[in-house]
Image (cartoon, rainbow, N blue to C red; front, side, top):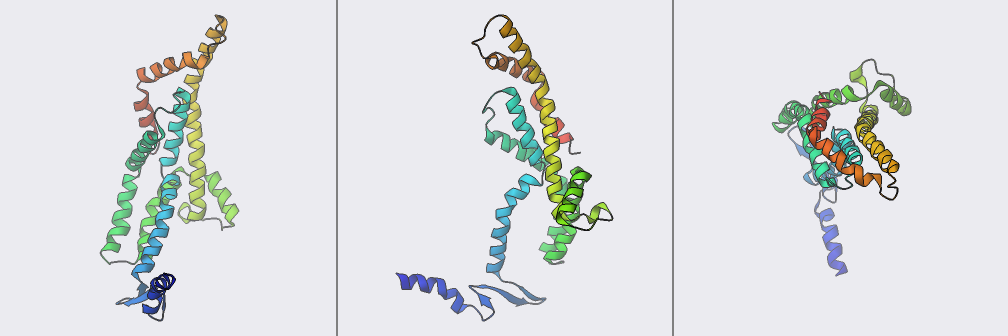
Length: 241
């Protein structure tokens, strides 16, 4: 059994050319050296592990999920809607906001690369400006300056010169601040209802009755009467335009 396992592991190395290791090598094509298929698979799988973090942090998904979480806490409904529902809603709203950017990236970078007109590095150079422009729209100058100082990068002469190593975390910080500001504003009307109900229950002597149990139906009723989901979702999406 041990010999069989050794042969299975070592066979690709013996069968591969001299300039390869375990089937990962550079192969020759008409334009010169290029990565072999196993190497491309390794790089693709490595990129896929980072893709969820990129989608969550560098898209509107970050702001939307935090605001929806604050809304659920303000309503006092505990787990209704569930996390799966909120994440699905945030994902679809993020797709709506990012659709123009994704289309521009597809037409400028992926289509020429797929047709063989440009290389992978050229495709990245042509597709990164739309992403950079989106991040610059919502990243605060203060946060960008902070990460430029932390990374010891030279001061950019213009916004398009800001490196992605400083722009990406600056966008995350800016989105966190915007999401917490929106969440605080959402809390205020529901907080007033909690204070009114608490003062009424205390004045009539119902000390043993938790005010949250009384205020929860009133908060849900208020949210439904003002068509809260339409207002919140509409305001969130419009905040990115």
